[in-house]
Amino acid sequence: MSTDATSAASGPLTGLRIVELGGIGPGPFCGMLLADQGADVIRIDRHTEIGSRSGHPVLHRNRRSVALNLKDPRDVETVLKIIDTADAVIEGFRPGVTERLGLGPDVCLARNPELVYGRMTGWGQDGPLAQEPGHDINYIALTGALGAMGSEGGVPPVPLNLVGDMGGGGMLLALGMTTAMLRSRIDGRGQVVDAAMTDGTAVQLALIHGLLARGRWVDRRASNMFDGAAPFYRTYRCADGRFVAVGCVEPQFYAAMLRVLELADDLHFARQHDRDAWPTMAERLAQVFSTRTRTEWESRFDGQGACVSPVLTLTEAAEHPHNVSRGTFGTFGDGFVQPSPAPRYLGTPASAPTPAPYVGAHTREVLAEIGLDAGHAAALA
Image 1 (cartoon, one colour):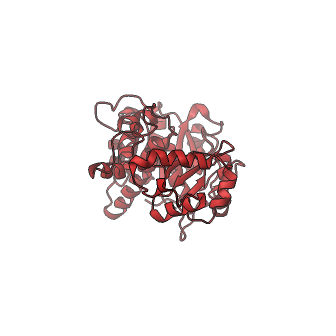
Image 2 (cartoon, rainbow, N blue to C red; image 1 turned 60 degrees about the horizontal axis):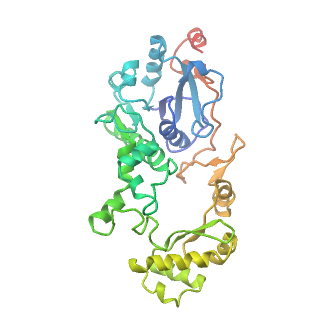
């Protein structure tokens, strides 16, 4: 349902209102993705934190904050009245928590049949582990993703929380909620979106499972093209201790790399996909890349079409000419570097992100929009 919320935001989701029941990690990431594209995302924060800065300066950007006490039945009724005006809800509690609060999907959908109720969990709403605690590393471990990473014989690495929390969690929920809201616009029926990080991580393994089914993937770490075994798809240390990333999978890019490295006539590299030759090839490439600095290699590979790139730090990435040219990162109103909204829409571009709000900064404003009188709103605020 469209809203009349006053907002300067623009983007393809402008006109949609989403209520986010305050949580951490992938739930707020989903809220950020939707808010970045113009949705009016109202975050319900804890009343005990009124006046403090919102918990995360990037994940909580582009929000309006309403501070209420979800253990007070009067405040729960206020949240329900806000949800009555919304297109969707985001919640990231363990299964059954919102039901006990009186904010479960059955209650909300009974009041607002067109509502999309997005649920973000690690294990899902059912199954033997549904009530167990966990974090990104646990979820990607159970799906096989973590076990496929790292060197042969070594321990699996502790990766950044991109695969489970963000890609398999928040981004999956954003997709699920957007498609469910589209369906609701078609037939007027809302529904529950059960987004589990285990499910989302498993979906991201679709390519690997396809290769495994065709006998083109060995179920063992550091034995395949994309897990560090292939000499043409891995990282190498340079003379200055920094690294380059080599990803020349296709033969023309592989040939370009060999040309730049002056290895085109080396017989060890004659058969790119000869797995028996990979260790020798990798050793030779490691020796060659160690002879020059990362900057020197970056210069030599510039414009050569070899799929060789510098491995940058977070600070360096924000300063790289390509990222600067596209505005991949920005400082916006907060004065610190953060990623820009993505993806980009040429017809309905997103506005520059607004800073994460102070907790409760929009309580009176939002309550006035749902029709509560000034006295009631002031008392809650």
